[in-house]
Image (cartoon, rainbow over the protein chains, first blue to last red):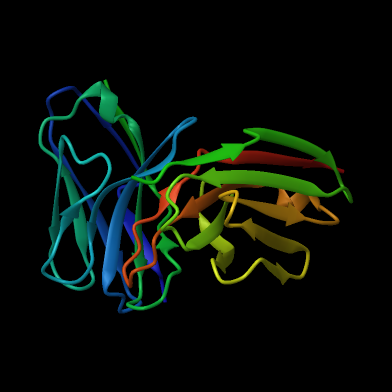
Length: 112
Length: 113
């Protein structure tokens, strides 16, 4: 099992450019999450998908959109990147009825 | 909504010493409190968790205590080793079948040989 995989690992964008961060899990988990991690601010939930076919906003959803493509894949899209979106992005997944979240290795995004 | 505060932000100890990281939460409805460890360049990984019906839980050298009345919980690491060096995050959630974790701001633990 690869667990949770994220692509790309690193990305540099210019202000106004768009991009999609990809996340996939092979653990047959129902729920998936996108977090951003900034220095001194911990992990903040951007969007989550409790189950296939549903998505909901988290704590900091502005400037982002998500798609739960199928049970395995959950993508995060930045339509018009801003320097404030410079961060490390983590995808996570969890099994229904089980509390533990499994995290991917992260994507380090820089917006110039 | 829930707010989780974590202290200290950095903690340096000598190998073999104990380390304690403390968190407070604001929402009395929260009843599930996990701790995650993040090593350099990796995603966080669950190391221990506790539910509100339990006051203390141990797993080898790590333990977590919970005081629901005071709304605080702590991570205790005994006999620290250099491989314990990492960033530790506490979190809280109201466990209603689906969890939306609210994380603390993290503690960078450095264990010196």
